[in-house]
Length: 195
Image (cartoon, rainbow, N blue to C red; front, side):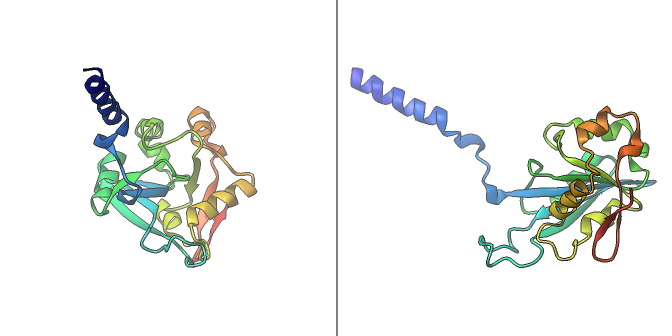
């Protein structure tokens, strides 16, 4: 009887610690690198730069050039625009590796509390993600190839940090002085920091 009880206990313990019910495989996730948010009279549009695993081979020697892609979505809110963008992808968006939020010119003022609520959403944002404002549409920054960089968002973040223009979500949410946000401009093949 003790042996049967021990076997049942071991089986139950194995099921308890296996996490079989909510297992998300990396291959089923779309890894977000940067999010651009634009606001206009029709609502909100988002541009999401993500790692495109179809462009990579798994080794550094086999990967040349950009390994990202961009998807767009439109909606009445940021969340609905993201949902629309996600519908066109083969997997679920994963925001845990996001490096950058870019707001289109004036979008942060137009969205106000809705933007702050989105940035406070722990599933889509982190306090250490960089924040910048585009001098025009955020989409142009998100789609910029950064001179053929493998991960353009990473290249732009490094540029912002190197130039001492790093403002993070936490700084943005806690600051009353919005002039601290770096303004960036997408040129034909590179993004430049204006202030």
